[in-house]
Length: 292
Length: 292
DNA sequence: CTGAAAGCGCTTACAG
DNA sequence: CTGAAAGCGCTTACAG
Image 1 (cartoon, rainbow over the protein chains, first blue to last red):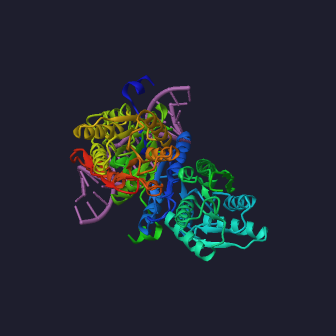
Image 2 (image 1 turned 180 degrees about the horizontal axis):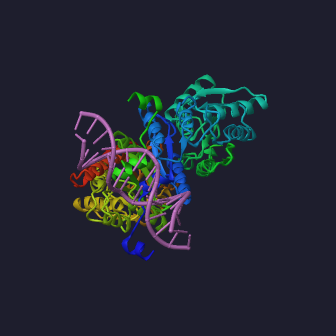
Image 3 (image 1 turned 30 degrees about the vertical axis):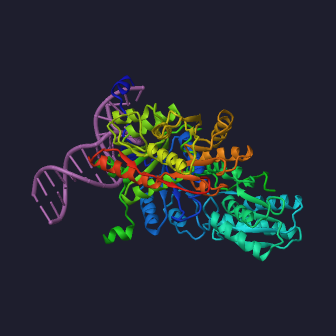
């Protein structure tokens, strides 16, 4: 050991990997297309940092890969087939993505950061429907009666679940759903808000399926001369940092992204060790600010 | 080749790495401490994605490592000493960080995403001083005379350079500098703005060294009943997405982070191939919006 | 030009 | 318990 210290010896990683057939490296695959919604999200860096910290604690390394195109998807598959990683964590998976099934076929432990269409992939998800219902009930408590919703892109489970939660809560309280389509971008939120004002000028509340769209909606409401929250109350989803510095500041359903990331890492590490594969659902909470 | 296809053969990566002594893998080391400013920055995801794309194009892999503490710094050093990577790209380096020197001592090709105290490390940097000067001249053209600055944390080169650019521009036009210290967070921008209003109630413009602080300053100005831009003009730096949806929207010096990331990757790949190591300075441009 | 051998630097069963 | 040998799956000089 003295010699080790004196000579600064460090074991060669490739040689060790070769013989042990372990790499202590996990892939984080961001499946979002280039113009995709999730990885441009303000929460992306939170998620990546939380994953990185958790893997470091476990003594593992993180290889970050984008799967933005068919070509890069192939690269990911080949890299993983090359035995470079012990497992993979998929982020921002669209419902129709062929990648998860391909990885499972290679017998690689795979976990998804959200619900997917591949039934045998363990995942960690937010309680999207519950969060949306919480938002609706909060608006009802505030005395709102005509509550519209702006959806995310419906090919994403999160977007569908948030819409379902809104719909269910409206139905349960005997109300009619008022829905405009968005795609999780601020611009789409603004456009959806414009459309809602035209179609349903009597509305007195809006539930936006994420904060970026809520911010777009706030802007349009301001331009249209509607006061928030006096005339129209607005609730967002995710509680990104910007939610606290819009004017008025935005009530939002907080997505515990860092906790979700940590849970996903644990699920993956457990899976590699042959542990259970039950999905994990993260709770969320409503953060009430000036907009409601 | 038919057999390769039929059997789905893929070369074993570890065996190949062992014999070739190349890994085709580069480390991206985020040197920011846990509460650090840079990696919580909205631009972090932009940078990471741009690097990832560029490495993918070059057929390289990306290992993401955090160096948030002495312990994790040691881990980074050991990992790199283990020969797992062909080079390293350092992000968010503080002036006093011992990591770059340690890596250079291991004869690893290293490039920094900003200027550092290690003289022999090639880097890519923004024209921070030039950007700050542009902001000041823009404010002067708008007829502003008492222009204050809010600085970033001065242990960061970016922050010092932006301050220097402001100071120089003020001096060149025979004006007195008015400076309040911040640390690149929104909160610190708000605090600095409060202090400025107290110390220099006559000020008619503020140059904030980044957008987050400018957003904090906008809020305080609003609370203090100062109209922007009528009473006080505000310029930020970085042009993060939020700059376009504050009210009023924020004039800002755009930092071309994606281009900077691409340039840093090229510099590193060139360095590995024995290419030149000249620093690269990225130009920036002023994006004029409602706040000036 | 083709094919067998040596060797990269480890770990792990196995012999002494 | 210690120490030498085999082998992980490649690449690359080298012999035929």
